[in-house]
Length: 263
Length: 308
Ligand SMILES: Nc1ncnc2c1ncn2[C@@H]1O[C@H](COP(=O)(O)OP(=O)(O)O)[C@@H](O)[C@H]1O
Ligand SMILES: [Mg+2]
Image (cartoon, rainbow over all chains, first blue to last red; front, side, top):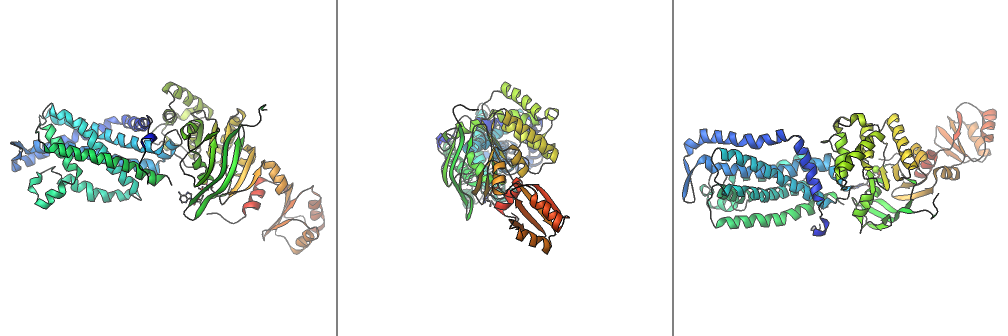
């Protein structure tokens, strides 16, 4: 396996992105619905049903209503889902069933550019979802500005990270049904235990330690910190975690895909 | 035709590729000259697709040299890929896009402007009789239409070399005829074509020169008609249900006989004298005389046992 060299990449990466974007645009009305409707459903369900029982949650020096607590987590989870599912199921279908990568390889593009284009597109989907959700949630008055604007760069970073993780799965699974494994071993536990629906402090000490290893924990912390304008020095560490993870996993994803396809 | 002598478009030297213990390509060397249609013939598993995939960097070579347009593939693969059009064996059309957008979208990978791409798409749709289906989704196209679109897509960058991997496998006779006509037309216009196939009729009809490949290496190379004449002969006498009298007659005549049990094949180099005597003196029924074909040569060289 070879680490991808920067000389392998050119503006053509953007062509792959463009292909996916164009198809997304063809059915944007459907693609736009989940990020718009989902937060409303959650906010209604949790805000009306659960929040009254849970009461207020301590966050830094403040007490916030439960709905406010989970709203940033919903955005974080959407960032994770949008990119992860794009580079797993969707990329796998393009690679394996539709032979799209095969078709693109017959043009001046190389495989490294194709994979990077896919990852960038997946991250873009995360940004679109985060933005749409952010708008809806802001209409409910649950986000604070200008802090919430930082969700866009965070969606880029988180999108790149979970797209890379998804692409690594795609490079390793023998068949499409095997994606169940990383989903129930990784994605679902993260969805539940990354400080999303309850504060990490409620977990036993060892579990808090484990949670600190999960990428979604750090994304949730940052998104919540920015959206609610709770500044803390710890956020720099979370940011560093995400940046380092992207710096390692993105090239790794490309290298593994090259190993899978070219032999 | 050409004052400066033949121009070599593709030069392959001693290509090799192993998948584990399978030697898929085993020392393949050939050259394609400008303006010709060159055929890579071989049974299933001969290594045709592997060879084609080497030409666009999909399959790395274990060893061997590959030059296209006098450029080294390892150094200038992007320049090379800009100038070739590839129609892969398997359908790789974009099922999320319409027929027309498949062409326009593909042109973008070659950095062709949107307006120019649209112009070329119209031209190609017309050439391949696809105009009526331009806005259809490719998912609903028949196999023949998909192949035509694959071929059209391979031409969208106006390649100097068109590479076709089994372009008509699995098509009905009508679609096949149409494709052959179009390919002949493209050749007429001066396009250089590299074609793999296991349809002998296709090779005989389109190829100026060809190699027959089996187990990754070349068995024979040359002009199809000349090869058939040299290696098989002029005509083939087929005898169904041969009896002892027939066998004795052929033995006495010292013929080159291929014995398939229920059928005998006799390769004849000259005239129909032997055929006439056989049918007059021994027996007439079940005996047919036909011109020798590329298929005879192919089967003679690659054997008759089933592949894969
Ligand atoms: N990716 C691969 N992995 C392992 N074996 C392969 C692979 N691709 C082709 N082969 C083997 O290499 C040989 C040549 O295959 P191929 O080039 O597809 O032949 P053809 O196109 O002439 O039918 C076959 O035995 C095939 O099974
Ligand atoms: Mg093949």
